[in-house]
Image 1: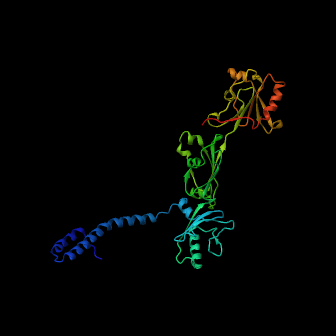
Image 2: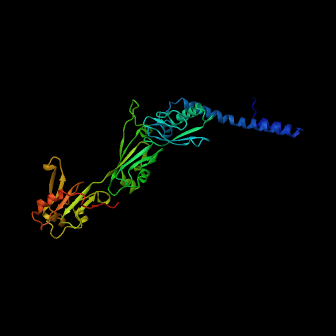
Image 3: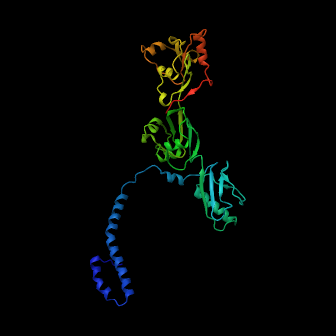
Length: 364
């Protein structure tokens, strides 16, 4: 093919005007325009081609696998729920559960089909061959999609309103996962633990030098996410991950107080102290032995597995002694002066607290 420039192409215009046959002139004009456009595009193509050559000389940078690549490589496992559609054959188009032996049973086929270890595309080809070989469908067109899977799911447990396993076939965020679980429960702490699954480890490149996956566990501050709107805390969640929202601890206030009960160390009550606990319990009664108040705390190294920490509540209330911090599962016991053997019997009663006490949850 001979290429011409746009300048030389203009010389052909007089011949087009003198052409006696209009159809011939039209065809010549189309050919001429095509040659001009092709000549103009050649320099651009050449520059792009040279750029591509220079790029190929550079070593290719390795990057973690994408979610779409991993989804295409997904292999079917026992207990997966598959949707199999055979075009124009509604009798065979339905959901199929992969059995414990890794097979599925399709009506009108004499034998089960081995599905475990195959990708959806590979299983589609197997089913097509089986239907064609059995003479059921001459030209079968089969599609297989995974509806639910232990791999394509995320487990949400702990202090959420609806803890369970949710299907997940793509990347999402921690906030979306918590929303699916109905939000945090009243006893939730400010920490979520995220354990990465195999898909996340491959996508994020969490592998050692040998290419083996390296497990990863993340701690996320839910206060930053939910109250402060910190986008950095809204981490990505992948199929196969698990999310656990930790339960907040409880501090118990019993004895000569107006509202005995348990108070969760969540929300506004996280930094619990003796003064705050007494305020939440509606203050002490008029018969309280403030000087003999004690904190009963679990201590494996102490006698009977617990220790009794004396608290002079009278001095703390008067501002003459520093306030004391309370820990999860502490029991703040304020004895009553009207009871016989008030202190010792009261301590034993405080140790026996259980489901009879009301649990008060902190506001968010």
